[in-house]
Image (cartoon, rainbow, N blue to C red; front, side, top):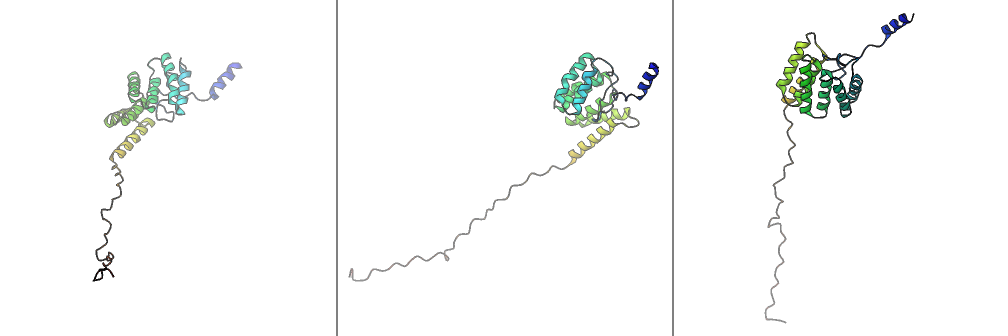
Length: 202
Protein backbone atom coordinates (compact mmCIF):
# COMPACT_ATOMS: atom_id res chain seq x y z
CA UNK A 1 0.00 0.00 0.00
CA UNK A 2 2.80 2.39 0.87
CA UNK A 3 4.38 1.73 -2.52
CA UNK A 4 1.15 2.67 -4.27
CA UNK A 5 0.83 5.89 -2.29
CA UNK A 6 4.44 6.82 -3.03
CA UNK A 7 3.94 6.27 -6.76
CA UNK A 8 0.79 8.41 -6.68
CA UNK A 9 2.65 11.17 -4.89
CA UNK A 10 5.26 11.22 -7.63
CA UNK A 11 2.56 11.63 -10.25
CA UNK A 12 1.04 14.68 -8.59
CA UNK A 13 4.26 16.31 -7.40
CA UNK A 14 5.05 19.76 -8.82
CA UNK A 15 7.18 19.88 -11.98
CA UNK A 16 10.92 20.03 -11.68
CA UNK A 17 12.71 23.30 -12.00
CA UNK A 18 13.23 24.40 -15.58
CA UNK A 19 16.32 22.96 -17.18
CA UNK A 20 18.75 25.35 -18.85
CA UNK A 21 21.81 23.73 -20.42
CA UNK A 22 20.74 24.83 -23.85
CA UNK A 23 18.87 27.87 -22.69
CA UNK A 24 15.69 27.85 -20.71
CA UNK A 25 14.44 31.13 -19.44
CA UNK A 26 14.16 32.58 -16.00
CA UNK A 27 12.34 35.60 -17.37
CA UNK A 28 15.65 37.04 -18.53
CA UNK A 29 15.92 35.39 -21.90
CA UNK A 30 18.42 32.69 -21.05
CA UNK A 31 20.04 30.55 -18.43
CA UNK A 32 17.83 28.62 -16.07
CA UNK A 33 18.54 25.51 -14.07
CA UNK A 34 20.75 23.26 -16.14
CA UNK A 35 20.79 19.51 -16.31
CA UNK A 36 24.39 19.72 -15.12
CA UNK A 37 23.30 21.29 -11.81
CA UNK A 38 20.00 19.64 -10.90
CA UNK A 39 20.47 17.23 -8.02
CA UNK A 40 24.21 17.87 -7.86
CA UNK A 41 26.61 19.37 -5.34
CA UNK A 42 26.35 23.14 -5.42
CA UNK A 43 22.72 23.09 -6.54
CA UNK A 44 21.46 24.89 -3.43
CA UNK A 45 23.96 27.72 -3.90
CA UNK A 46 23.07 27.92 -7.58
CA UNK A 47 19.35 28.07 -6.86
CA UNK A 48 19.87 30.81 -4.28
CA UNK A 49 21.95 32.77 -6.79
CA UNK A 50 19.27 32.53 -9.46
CA UNK A 51 16.61 33.78 -7.05
CA UNK A 52 18.81 36.75 -6.13
CA UNK A 53 19.43 37.51 -9.80
CA UNK A 54 15.69 37.53 -10.47
CA UNK A 55 15.44 40.25 -7.82
CA UNK A 56 18.36 42.15 -9.42
CA UNK A 57 20.66 41.53 -6.44
CA UNK A 58 23.63 40.81 -8.66
CA UNK A 59 26.42 41.48 -6.16
CA UNK A 60 24.74 39.24 -3.59
CA UNK A 61 24.43 36.42 -6.12
CA UNK A 62 28.11 36.25 -7.06
CA UNK A 63 29.39 34.52 -3.86
CA UNK A 64 26.76 31.79 -4.26
CA UNK A 65 27.71 31.30 -7.90
CA UNK A 66 31.39 31.11 -6.98
CA UNK A 67 30.64 28.42 -4.40
CA UNK A 68 28.55 26.51 -6.92
CA UNK A 69 31.42 26.72 -9.40
CA UNK A 70 33.82 25.31 -6.81
CA UNK A 71 31.51 22.33 -6.43
CA UNK A 72 30.96 21.95 -10.18
CA UNK A 73 34.02 23.41 -11.99
CA UNK A 74 33.38 24.63 -15.53
CA UNK A 75 29.61 24.13 -15.30
CA UNK A 76 28.20 26.08 -18.25
CA UNK A 77 25.07 27.26 -16.43
CA UNK A 78 27.04 28.68 -13.51
CA UNK A 79 29.55 30.32 -15.85
CA UNK A 80 26.70 31.80 -17.87
CA UNK A 81 25.14 33.42 -14.81
CA UNK A 82 28.52 34.67 -13.62
CA UNK A 83 28.81 36.35 -17.01
CA UNK A 84 25.33 37.81 -16.61
CA UNK A 85 25.92 39.21 -13.12
CA UNK A 86 29.23 40.78 -14.08
CA UNK A 87 27.64 42.34 -17.17
CA UNK A 88 24.82 43.83 -15.13
CA UNK A 89 27.40 45.29 -12.73
CA UNK A 90 29.29 46.90 -15.62
CA UNK A 91 32.29 44.55 -15.60
CA UNK A 92 32.33 43.83 -19.34
CA UNK A 93 35.80 42.20 -19.56
CA UNK A 94 34.95 39.84 -16.69
CA UNK A 95 31.56 39.10 -18.21
CA UNK A 96 33.12 38.31 -21.59
CA UNK A 97 35.52 35.84 -19.99
CA UNK A 98 32.72 33.93 -18.23
CA UNK A 99 30.54 33.73 -21.35
CA UNK A 100 33.43 32.45 -23.43
CA UNK A 101 34.21 29.82 -20.79
CA UNK A 102 30.54 28.77 -20.73
CA UNK A 103 30.49 28.33 -24.50
CA UNK A 104 33.80 26.49 -24.47
CA UNK A 105 32.16 24.03 -22.10
CA UNK A 106 28.84 23.88 -23.99
CA UNK A 107 28.99 25.41 -27.51
CA UNK A 108 25.22 25.01 -27.90
CA UNK A 109 24.24 26.86 -24.72
CA UNK A 110 21.50 29.14 -26.03
CA UNK A 111 21.39 31.34 -22.94
CA UNK A 112 25.11 32.06 -23.18
CA UNK A 113 24.84 32.91 -26.88
CA UNK A 114 22.02 35.36 -26.17
CA UNK A 115 23.74 37.00 -23.22
CA UNK A 116 27.05 37.24 -25.08
CA UNK A 117 25.27 38.90 -27.99
CA UNK A 118 23.77 41.46 -25.62
CA UNK A 119 27.20 42.08 -24.11
CA UNK A 120 28.66 42.70 -27.57
CA UNK A 121 26.00 45.36 -28.14
CA UNK A 122 27.03 47.03 -24.88
CA UNK A 123 30.59 47.02 -26.21
CA UNK A 124 29.45 48.42 -29.60
CA UNK A 125 30.50 45.21 -31.37
CA UNK A 126 27.48 44.81 -33.63
CA UNK A 127 29.07 42.28 -36.01
CA UNK A 128 29.94 39.98 -33.11
CA UNK A 129 26.39 40.28 -31.74
CA UNK A 130 25.05 39.30 -35.15
CA UNK A 131 27.39 36.31 -35.08
CA UNK A 132 25.78 35.15 -31.84
CA UNK A 133 22.35 35.61 -33.42
CA UNK A 134 23.47 33.40 -36.31
CA UNK A 135 24.40 30.71 -33.79
CA UNK A 136 20.96 30.96 -32.19
CA UNK A 137 19.31 30.77 -35.61
CA UNK A 138 21.20 27.53 -36.18
CA UNK A 139 20.23 26.15 -32.77
CA UNK A 140 16.60 27.33 -32.80
CA UNK A 141 15.22 25.93 -36.03
CA UNK A 142 11.67 26.27 -34.72
CA UNK A 143 12.37 29.51 -32.87
CA UNK A 144 13.20 30.14 -29.23
CA UNK A 145 13.03 32.90 -26.67
CA UNK A 146 16.78 33.51 -26.72
CA UNK A 147 16.80 34.13 -30.46
CA UNK A 148 13.77 36.42 -30.25
CA UNK A 149 15.26 38.48 -27.41
CA UNK A 150 18.60 38.97 -29.16
CA UNK A 151 16.90 39.77 -32.47
CA UNK A 152 14.96 42.58 -30.79
CA UNK A 153 18.04 43.83 -28.95
CA UNK A 154 19.98 44.10 -32.22
CA UNK A 155 17.07 45.84 -33.95
CA UNK A 156 16.80 48.35 -31.10
CA UNK A 157 20.55 48.95 -31.23
CA UNK A 158 20.49 49.61 -34.97
CA UNK A 159 17.47 51.89 -34.64
CA UNK A 160 19.19 53.95 -31.97
CA UNK A 161 22.38 54.15 -34.03
CA UNK A 162 20.46 55.38 -37.09
CA UNK A 163 18.50 58.04 -35.22
CA UNK A 164 19.77 61.58 -35.88
CA UNK A 165 21.49 63.16 -32.96
CA UNK A 166 19.36 65.69 -31.14
CA UNK A 167 20.87 69.12 -31.79
CA UNK A 168 22.05 70.94 -28.73
CA UNK A 169 19.92 73.86 -27.66
CA UNK A 170 21.28 77.08 -29.10
CA UNK A 171 21.76 79.96 -26.67
CA UNK A 172 19.50 82.93 -27.19
CA UNK A 173 21.05 85.50 -29.53
CA UNK A 174 22.29 88.62 -27.82
CA UNK A 175 21.02 91.77 -29.47
CA UNK A 176 23.77 93.90 -30.95
CA UNK A 177 21.55 96.92 -31.42
CA UNK A 178 22.82 99.68 -29.18
CA UNK A 179 20.48 101.86 -27.21
CA UNK A 180 19.31 104.84 -29.21
CA UNK A 181 21.21 108.02 -28.55
CA UNK A 182 19.43 111.23 -27.87
CA UNK A 183 19.65 113.41 -30.97
CA UNK A 184 21.20 116.79 -30.75
CA UNK A 185 17.90 118.39 -31.66
CA UNK A 186 16.13 116.60 -28.88
CA UNK A 187 18.62 117.66 -26.28
CA UNK A 188 17.51 120.66 -24.15
CA UNK A 189 19.05 123.95 -25.24
CA UNK A 190 21.76 125.31 -23.02
CA UNK A 191 20.64 128.40 -21.06
CA UNK A 192 21.65 131.70 -22.76
CA UNK A 193 24.49 133.63 -21.21
CA UNK A 194 23.34 136.98 -19.73
CA UNK A 195 25.56 139.80 -20.98
CA UNK A 196 27.04 142.06 -18.38
CA UNK A 197 25.43 145.56 -18.42
CA UNK A 198 27.46 148.21 -20.18
CA UNK A 199 29.16 150.84 -18.14
CA UNK A 200 30.46 148.64 -15.46
CA UNK A 201 28.98 147.94 -12.11
CA UNK A 202 25.92 150.06 -11.24
